[in-house]
Structures are given as structure tokens and as C-alpha cells.
Amino acid sequence: MLVYEGIKSEFINDVNLNMIVNKIYERYRKFFGRTTESQLNS
Image 1 (tube, rainbow, N blue to C red):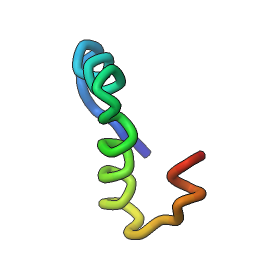
Image 2: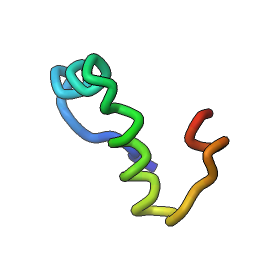
Image 3: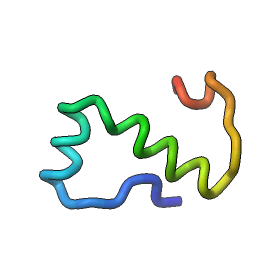
Image 4: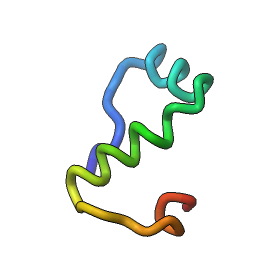
């Protein structure tokens, strides 16, 4: 399953702005629905 899609510079920017977790979570949620906090933390 692809949970992040973008070019390298977008990825680096998302990491630097602490947005990567939110973007991956939103993509994961679209596929599987809700998830637990422990899954998000891992």
C-alpha cells in the first residue's frame, strides 16, 4: 500500500514542517478507516 506520494523535495518539505505524519495518516485512513493512536505512533 502506498501511503505517501510525491517528489523528493515535497517529502523533505513535509518532514521539515512536521506534516509527514498527518499526510501519511490521512492516506492510511482513506484505505482502512479509523486507526488507533498506538498504530499512528508506530
